[in-house]
Length: 256
Ligand code: PLP
Image 1 (cartoon, rainbow, N blue to C red):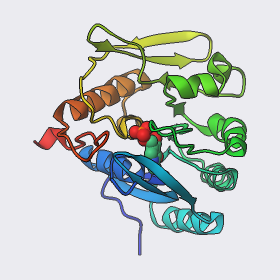
Image 2 (image 1 turned 120 degrees about the vertical axis):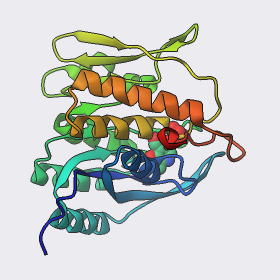
Image 3 (image 1 turned 180 degrees about the vertical axis):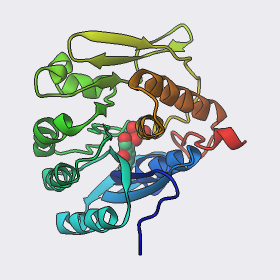
């Protein structure tokens, strides 16, 4: 059988959140909202709801490798989004896959913790992320805490990240802006409106997937960051309260 040629296909490599607010399910919903066919590879099962994460079960690296290979053999993958990696072994398997595939567009969301405080990447995994995965990414999307924890400005030093978007940023007087930074000290403030809501679960996953979709659809980095920010802002605005804790955003705001 030949390859599917119906439109771009994106791959999400991330964790499974059974409450469907974050992780691969947030990524696939975002890709669907953009009209992009999303495939996914789960790095870890989490026991989780809107109330928080209570357990993490990483997937066996050999199983992960087999899933990634199966997908790469079948689909022409236009872009890859990397989210939660859980362990160094998983990060290592993902690094080897990315190196062998030479993908044109890779968006890396360096997930360290859930908002509820659960650790989603081990210390050894963090080293692998810094040394092996970040240099492969087209752009990475840390929130402010992740940016600081991963070394801040040092991320853009020689051999490190090619571009960084620091999200969930400064929020003052009704605005919430992100920063786009590239090597050479370039910093661009990306304006956005702050939305008063408790439905913020998975905003980081949604932003990074939206950014990948924008890039795959041909927008340049500045346009793509602005477009992804708008996607998340509208998804926050359209969200309805769900669950006992921090509910999911509404990925299909465009169709309501
Ligand atoms: N669970 C999974 C599987 C994730 O990939 C992420 C990603 O960021 C989270 C939870 C954290 O989501 P939040 O920051 O909204 O708690």
